[in-house]
Every structure is written in structure tokens, then in C-alpha cells.
Length: 360
Image (cartoon, rainbow, N blue to C red; front, side, top):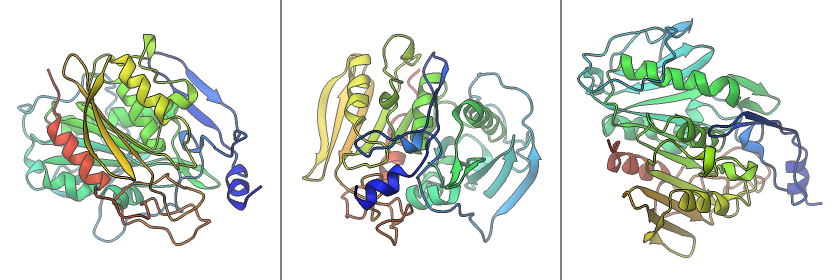
């Protein structure tokens, strides 16, 4: 057994996943015989030790509950009035805030223009063992979103394993969604410009949010996650989202953490929404970016790449264009792809969101 296989196989994994229209399913610990571990759908190997963003952050409120309104009513229209504090969101002014709501800490970036209301909202969710600061180091969405008219929300998972933070879908998904609803009201968000992206565990959450709340999100951009690995998100029958929304999906061919399922995930979306190839957006010897279109005009853009992280354990479990390059071949930190890429994942995500407000 190679050192890499030994390192990966030594991790015990407990996966919690929920399907569109289905019950939560608990998948026991284990690694398949090929050395692949479905690690980042649950606790596991997805980053450095949790790091908190210091210096200059205003921390607002303590562990304050939400206002108790868990209605799936979606964000308010842009003319809902000026931003107003509500529940655990105690400050709606411009700047960087940290709110603790229902036991989850949220980093929220608000530009001066968004402090006046009417902006969009981007939910950006990290993977296991990461936190909001590590996620932003890879996506740069606090800066990109603020410059493009979005309030950016980046939660940090409350669950902890021996390797670091981890999301529990059954417990955390509803809380995160309630915070999105609350933030949409408090910051008077434009309901046609609410989007979500996530890496690894955050990517799995993006697929689940698409399945469960397609009426709220205008578009989603999952990275390094494919629910088809666990026979979820098949985009057929009860696992079909309530409506078609644009999806940008990226996955590495050399991904050692979530491997062997990206083609099935792509095919499920294309088949479930009866899509046909539209065009190749761009490509070279290391990646292919393909656009598919349905009869209704909805788009699914799929990026398959051959890049890899500096870590041999992570392999292709990385984000192109990210400067977060690790320092150890056998470590579990550094989620930027080592090789230079002609595109940047964070830039691609925000451009996709800008191009795809909700189709009503």
C-alpha cells in the first residue's frame, strides 16, 4: 500500500447526506477498495486546522437565536424597505461582521452600497476541516462579491472531528437556510439575485440546497462534490429540483477525496433536465468547460479539470486559480491547484452569478 493510500485509508468517515424529496441516509465509515474515500460529504480530510480571520473584524452579538420564523418564503423583493437589524443580525452597516446564530458563526461582508439595500446575496460554504476564512482565501468572494453588488455570507461549521470542522446536513442545512432567509430580510436583498456556491462538503450542501430550495436560489455553483456517488441528486423522479436553475459545476479528474462520480453527476443533470450540448466555453489540454442547455433555455456549465493540489493526499481536490497552495506533499491543507490555470474559480463563480439572476 502506498503512503498516500495508507494516509487516506486511515481516516474514518461518517457521512450524512439528504436527497431531494428523500429521507436522510446515514452512510457508515469506510473507504472503497480503490483508495477513494467519500470523505468530504461528512467529517474528514478537507483542509488545514481551522483558522479564524483576525484583525479588523467587528464581532456582532453572541449566540443569539434566529427570530423563530422558519418559513420557506424566500428573500424579500428589492423594494422591501431599508436594511434593518433583525434577530441575531445586530448590525446591517457596511463592513465585515461576524454573527453567531443557532450555534453557527457567519462571516458577512457588506459593501457601502449594499448597506443601502437592494443588493444580491452569495452564500459561500467551506468543506470539512476548513472555516470561513480558509474558504475566502480560496474563492476571494468577500472582495469579488462586494465589488459586484452582493452581500457575501460565509458560515463556519460548528461540528468538530479529530481533523477539524465538519457539517452535519441534517442539523446544519436548515439552520444555514434560515440564516439566508434572515439575512435576505435584514439586508433587504434582491430576491432575484440569491446564489450559492460551496467546495467539497460545501459543494454537497449546494446540491442539497438546489434540490430543496430551487425556488429561492437563482443559481448554484458546487465544487468538488457529486451526490451521485451516494445515489443522491439523480435529477429524476423525487430527486428532481422543483424548477430548473442555472448550475456551474467543477470537478477534478484527479480528485482523491471525492472521486469517480463526476461524470455520473454531470450525466444526471443533463438527462434529468433533457439538456443538449450547446458549446465548449473554453478548453485546453488540462480542462474542458462545456455548456449544456435545456429546451427552456436553462444552462448547466460543467468544468472538468486535470489540475491537482500540492498535497498528494488531496490530488485534484482543489480550486483553480486559488493562491492557497500547501507546503507538504503529505499534508491536508492548501486547496488551491498547484498548476497555473487560465481561469480563476472565484472569478468564474461571481461572473456566472452576475449572468444568471432568477428567471421568473
